[in-house]
Image (tube, rainbow, N blue to C red; front, side, top):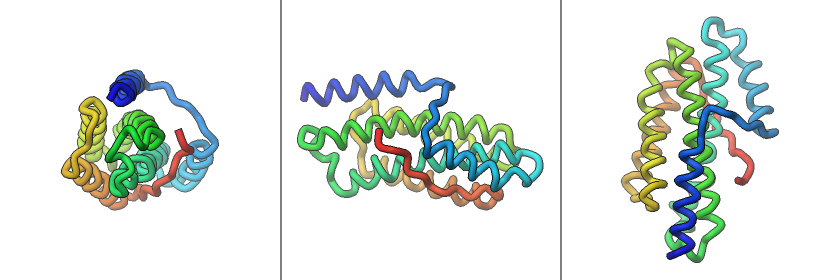
Length: 170
């Protein structure tokens, strides 16, 4: 139980420390180059749309790889026996909140994506509260998944197809 408390404190500090600074990795820089190239010719808001696609793709990829799939597989059901999975999920949650903040900023620069600011902000708040609570209920997990699918559908309708990218292990 003490280890779980330490993980929660680290998670809370990580989420609280997610500011507007960015870190670059090989995966994110490759995805940025691809996204920028793909939509640079799309006119007004093209760069914002490319940034939006990049950051949401990384956030959603981290969610599915390190949070959603392990919970569905039962790897996070007993935090003491799956310490590494809990640490990865915690780091992925902090990463996800950071990437969503960057995606929201990018969406605000594109009139076509402006309608996605509210659902993304709600998703980030939900992830923060789940980390603070230390548990994720099946209903919360299903809600997060449905918000992600809704955002992907709406973004595709606005001409910004989100392709999930799995970031390197935290």
